[in-house]
Image (cartoon, rainbow, N blue to C red; front, side, top):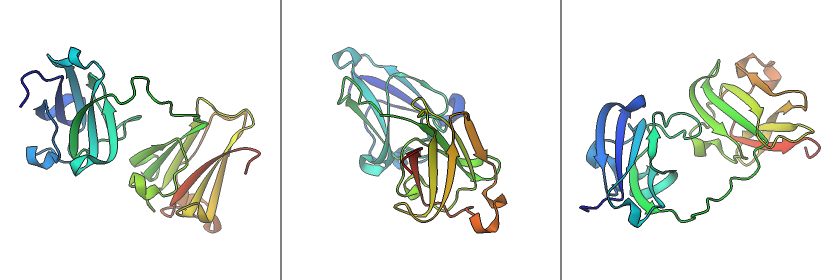
Length: 218
């Protein structure tokens, strides 16, 4: 074990730094060995005594053991709720690693015309995921065939002409589709209960892929 850790990480079972706490200074390929698999909800990351030797060092939180799956990369700071936007990583951490930043100049995410929130339950409740790019299979975000309510709002690069968001019955943008449009005069729209649509348009619990299309390209 290092005696000059670059980072000191405290992980907490509950949001706002409550519940059981564990302190880490080195990588853990499977958090089950420290009794923390899929229970981490808030995080504190401190600069350790060796931080100045590598000031771009980050803590990396992985969805699956052996550092696989989705990643959440965090710099020193306090993160009281990783269930929330933009992290969406609560109770999902199975491995933790430490690494210098691969890109001192962070890569750009790209254009974000709309921000979509999808919810497992009606009335914008239950498990939630935030979507800002096309998704060919919502299985990748753990929401396949479970979406019951939707909220869409303008993103920072919303096109002047407006934007379509198309929800598909099957993966890879196939099958029946539900088209929701946000025009140049609207800032947000929502469907609090997909079951309330006419039977011929019913899309509750069947959405499998999502595409974002600027108006005029549909």
